[in-house]
Image 1 (cartoon, each protein chain N blue to C red):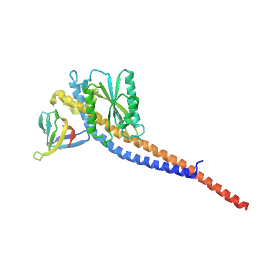
Image 2: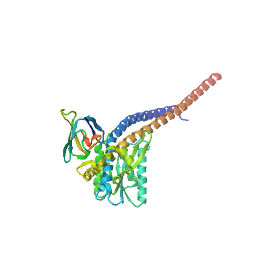
Image 3: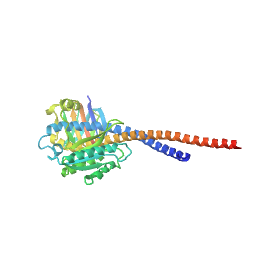
Image 4: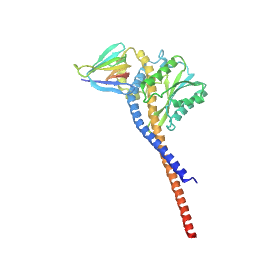
Length: 300
Length: 84
């Protein structure tokens, strides 16, 4: 049986842990709100770029199209861009993203493809342990407090340069899609070549009512459609990366809030259990003392 | 009549207004958009977007970097990478 003093020390240590996890939970909740707002604010741009790319790609596609749209004609080297966070203590957030990437890598390797990794954020570097030679680049996010477009653009430019140099044929983006504070879905998305959403006419109608209503001939292009598309495709890659950063930021905070909430509750349970044990031990000590006094008095 | 003008960057929706006229720095030259402009899609160069609220009002200048301008039945949308 632990001594009274040891128990007291234990209780106090759990209490201070609880204070920390509680504070972290509250900080995460505050940051989550901001990250969610940022994700919402980024949506109009991403949606519009996407709809323009989709409508242009459907027409300007075909032969002679940009390699960003048509691909390199090969399917050998796959680049997996794994976007993780800089900090841990966010539950299974980073683990889930890395696991999704590893699963994809194993799948591709089983099919005889070459796999390369491009890690973004400190927590993705664990991939080095499994694929010591596969990680070609690592983008540091430690200076980034909030997701900025410049950051996404830097990543996208680097990727595009590597693509142009023929380092890989297909690029996939891994991040956690934010659904709610409780649910974050590890997501895989092909960013190079651009996967044009299938032209479901009904869907296109709701997404881009004006684009489809204006008809094909009515819209004037300045410069030509092909040039606009060539200008737009690299930008689209940056937008997709930026969206991943935004979604990830919100997911990270949601996941952390959840993990810290659990930790706080666990600490509470532990404190209750230890307190009961402490009180019992104390009572036992008092009883023993009383028995000693009474028996001593009787002996007189 | 007013022209519906939206200026969007990846980070936020900068402006969404009913305005009189907007002058956009297109890659092939500046162009002004009034209400009822024909559908148009153009890339823009780094420069200033001039927003005029009234026919005789002083234009308001917004510096933009890289992007796309789209005119359709709903109005003018400028998708800029960066706007100040």
